Amino acid sequence: MRKSLLLILPLFGMTFFAAYAQSTSDQRNRVVQELRSRFAKADTDGDGGLTREEAKAMPRVASHFDDIDTDRDGKVSLEEIGRYLAAQRGK
Image (cartoon, rainbow, N blue to C red; front, side, top):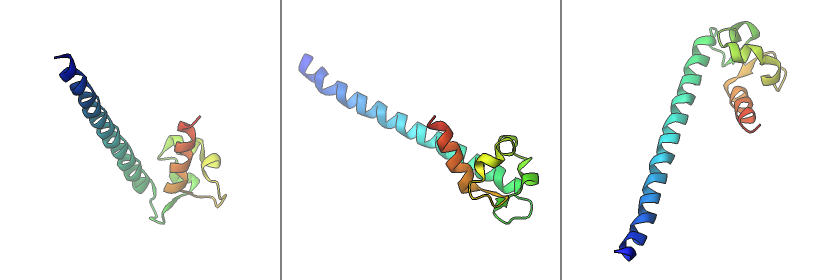
């Protein structure tokens, strides 16, 4: 009994970890899709970048516009927003 329990526990742990990892991955995908959707709606001219005026539709982006616009071209791209958010998670 004890021996079979020792064999089952690691399998349970691996199953739990796989389910957790899938859940985390699904959540991350939903967040990314939501960000893309909000970005597309804010990008009213469809040029792939948000001007300071367009960024007002995304208040967090607007309030950190200068920090996000790393190439200083007066627009923020979805990639710049992603890099900024990743850097904020790392702090």
